[in-house]
Length: 186
Image (cartoon, rainbow, N blue to C red; front, side, top):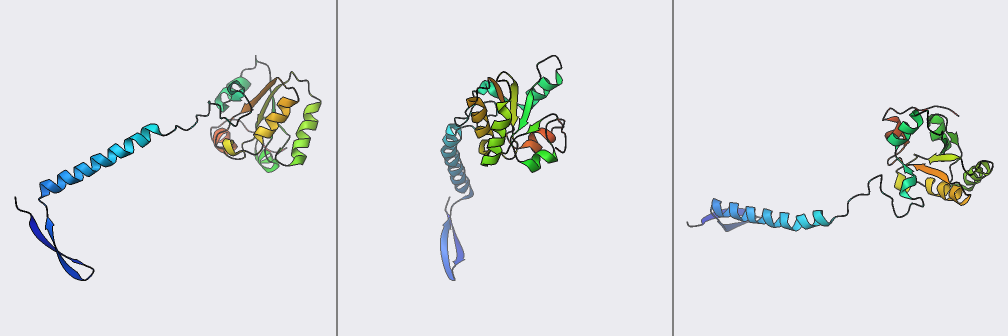
C-alpha cells in the first residue's frame, strides 16, 4: 500500500505530508493508547489509599478504639440499657447554637485559650470515671483545630472513658443530613 500525499496549510505555508494508510494509523493509535495505560497503571496501583474513617491517623492522640463513628454512637444512645455518655461539643458557639447532639453541652472552641480554659474548668469537677464523648464538626475532621487539643487536655486530666466522635466532613454532613436527632439553641 502506498502512502497518500496530503497537503495542509500550516502558518500560511502549504506543506505536503505523507498520510499513512488507515490501518497503520489505527495501529499507531492503539499502540500509543496501550503504552499510556501501561504507564498509568503502576501509578494507580502504587497510590496510597485514603485513610478510612475507622483507621487511626498518625496525628491522632487517641487509640483507634476510642474513635466512635456516628452510626455506632446513635445505636449506643438509642440503647437505654447501656451506660449514658456525657457529650461535649468543643466546636464553635454559633454551630452549637444552630444545632447539636441532644443533651450535649458546649465547652469550646478549644482553639482559643478562653475556650480551652473553659473546658478544663468544667471538666475539673467531674469524676475521672465518667463516660465522655467529645465532638466538634466545624470542618473536615483531619483539619479540625479543636478536637485534638480537647482530647489531649481531657486525657491528661486523667479521664479514662474518653472517646471522640469522628465526623469526617462536618456536623451537617455526617450527622444532620443523615437524619440523626439534633437539638437547637443553648
